[in-house]
Image (cartoon, rainbow, N blue to C red; front, side):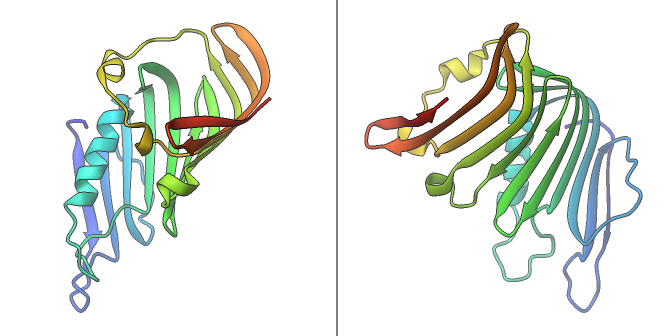
Amino acid sequence: LGNDISFEGVLPHDTMQFSRAHLAIGEDDTVSMGLGFSISANVDEVDLDSWLQAISKLHDGLPSTDKPILSEPQRIYVNADVMRISGQNINQLELVVKHSTDDWLLEFNAQQIRAKVTLYDDWLNRGIDIKADFIDLLEWHSDAQLEDQQFALNDLPPVNFECKSCRILGKDLGRVDFSLSRAPHGMQIDSLR
């Protein structure tokens, strides 16, 4: 996660629950803490899969009471020179993650992608919505870890994907829209254009 880590918080005595808390990884340029728990990272490079595992462990380690001392993060801010996502290098990334109600909204802004991704709490029924202004991947890097993983098709969520301007390996694909849904023996393409 990084070597420079700091934590600040406001813990009112009467509630014994952090009303404001902030975990900073790397140089912290946060002006002020909002309500709830937030995380910021200002790092040279980051691997998204490692981050997701760390956040999952943080979330799973929280007590399952009505009023835990620290709630799950409401906001996550990442600035990275390079982020690896499933083997792909994304350069000059600004990522904002917001937890609203039960869903997560991720806003990616980088050289290769500008997109909003919604991860619904009802993962297996509502799935993922991806709305990209553009995706421009000049190279494709396979990820050996992903190739070795066996995905249980029943664990994959439905996907709605919309990209206004897609370019993969230098090939201009233009606008790409598709939706995938769960089927008895895997995934099915509901629409593709």
